[in-house]
Image 1 (cartoon, rainbow, N blue to C red):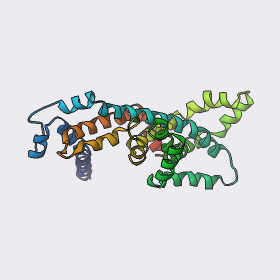
Image 2: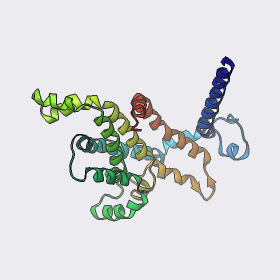
Image 3: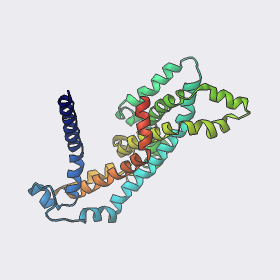
Image 4: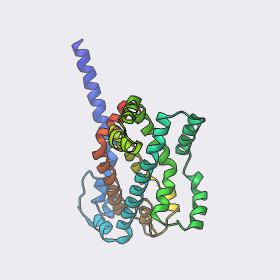
Length: 273
């Protein structure tokens, strides 16, 4: 029996190591390529750079067309995350605490927006933004991303709010709390894990979205995901700069994950992630 348990433990450990290698290898290889010259990338296959260089990172940090892409992405992603959470909080509270005609149908309709491909909304947004003057603006991209981030945030927050007993609301009202005071000082701290999880997913989905962000911008609000396509030229692909840009693109997501990692774990435990 002991030998069987040891064998099972060994295979589980082996599987975990293999999975980690499989998951980390693409990231390591991209990091490895970012320190190589383009000639070395296309000519040799090596686990470590033979001719270590920081030229690709220097290009990104000194070329305005590159680093402005990161700035633009951070601006509209932050705007979208704040607006999404602000809009989703009262909506999720209504779905959690009240029953009204068509509530389940409205909730399902919100989720269908999350399931709809962004290409479906592309033409309406393009025509609307051209008319009202929101083309190539950070606000325009942030508002466009609300289509799929607000439903996701509402769905996540509704699950966390439903886990808070209704008696807390009733006790606060009996004690004379107004709704804004109750919501901000009592209820919101109880669901801060849900807010963290929802903010994380809103950030990530807005950060990696390409189709809407690329089509609705041209110069002033062009994101890094669109800027990365300019590595393709008549002379070929600038693999080193593209790899360096990819590494830097992972950094903001890694920082966000670091700050909300405990909330994400709780979200998985509650079955809402």
